[in-house]
Length: 345
Image 1 (cartoon, rainbow, N blue to C red):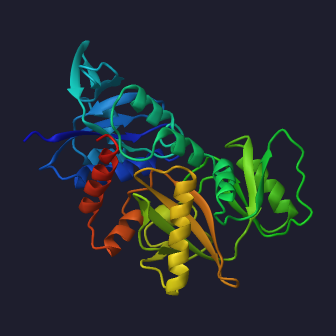
Image 2: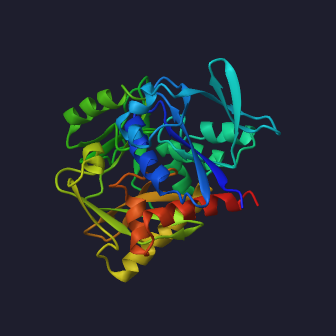
Image 3: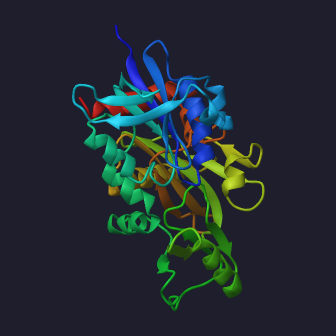
């Protein structure tokens, strides 16, 4: 029986390029080779697509870009030769693809643009569709969808760099300042007073021209993956210092993660229900991950955002939730592939 040919896309032009390389290394190593043939396609920080036939160990370090065996690659929409076209020494070669597995984060990777390209090329792909990817990339739009579908989320406003800052009359500190389309907590600041707010806004506007200011929920941080509309076990994220920022996400030993989280069963079930409702509100297909804060005084939970291509690094959350169900990383990758391919049948 012929193996299913999977093109793993990694790298990209966003600030999360290095995170993508780590995730892709894990995914490529874990896709069952007895069922799938993996083709590696890297995207440089400048947006160049390269077919990489080398050792997977070169990906996380970034050495893959300078490997002499790399060749230019493009997506082919041709119905007969659809897949990846590689260009080597002026000659073109077709590598037919059965499914694309994007392991990209941030701009051009999980914002719907790549998904739209793959749909135009009629190439099946893993993960969320164009619409849900675009909705979830912009946190201000995500929060509007949450409110429309009565998913609890922190109160807040969206401000633009060219507009005068007008805060609501009931505004209080502390608050959180977040770029609308950033990822991996890049461009996220906790603010304690007016002076810090202006500094945080100035920093955030170097990333984007529109930014969220929202109520800071004092309490515990959690995350819940949802696969095919069903929530996985709740995982608690407890940074040793500060909040769950870029360093605490990817530096081993910076955060204590507990799965299943130590919560009263009724609270855990309510959060799982809210995770499922959050995904439904933004039309999630296949799988995603929803981040939460739990107010430790009122015990109310608040959905913060939806991640349409959750990280798959050694410290990532979704693999730990799957492990709580008895699934290995290899099992998780195969599950994601199978779930994503269902919509094409």
